[in-house]
Structure formats: structure tokens, C-alpha cells
Image 1: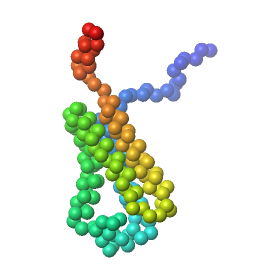
Image 2: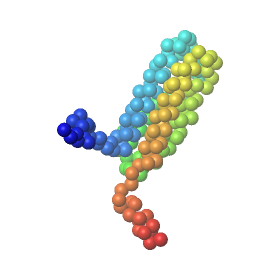
Image 3: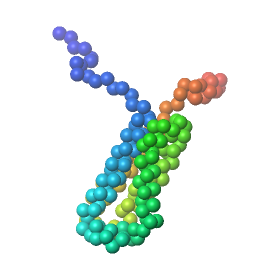
Image 4: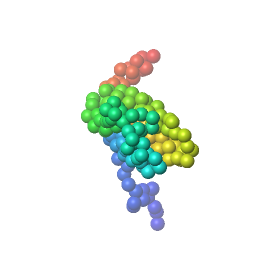
Length: 159
């Protein structure tokens, strides 16, 4: 009895377009971003600070709310922008926004006085940075069309 190199339960691995990878990564980032903020409410004293109008060391006035909406709104828009912008613009936008959000993610632990929640912050920041690194890699290695690389191929062939 001979066995084929292909097994009966093998699945075909269809390539996923870069746009779909980026949109999925930004969607995952947003779920994580929102749930980290939500789970932070379970930390003793968090809701009390919000009720007196303070988040971390910031007053929860109109400026804070507008900045918070901006910080959440940009990754939300990246989900749709990654799918709809022209490839060159989508690539550049993903590279810039992901690079800018790495320090934003790390800043979330600033001002933390207790090590009691270090695992929570370490895991959340680690996952956010990992997702942003994936966005950077996917955007950086975005495949070029044959037409875009044809000029380079001609130059290297002549040398």
C-alpha cells in the first residue's frame, strides 16, 4: 500500500491579502485596547477617581474626553483605511500610525505606583506592541506588483 504525500485531511492554505491582515490586526488591537481600559475599571479605586473627575492624573474635562476619543478613534479608522486607501497610501499610513502608537501603548503604564498589576499591564502592553509590530511588518513587506519591480529588474539585468 502506498501513501500519497498529501493526506486526506490536508487543508489548502489560501494566501490572505495584506489589506485583510492589516484590518484584522487593527480590529484585534481595538478589542484589546478597549478591554484593557474596561478591565482597568476593576482595579480598586479606579471608579472612585473617575467619579471625582480624575483619570490617572488628568482632569476628565472636555479636553481629556476629546483626546481620549482621538486616541481610540485613530485605530478604529485604521481598520477601514487599511482596506480602502490606495496601496501606497495605506502602506505609509499603517507604518506611521503603528510606529506612533507603540509609545502610546507603553505610556499606559506610566504613573503606576504599585507592582500589584504589573502582570496585567505587562501582558496588555506586550500584546498591543506585538500587534503593532505585526502591522509594521505587514505594511513594510507589502508585496509590489510586477510592474513596480520591472524597472528594478531591468536595471539589475543590465549591470
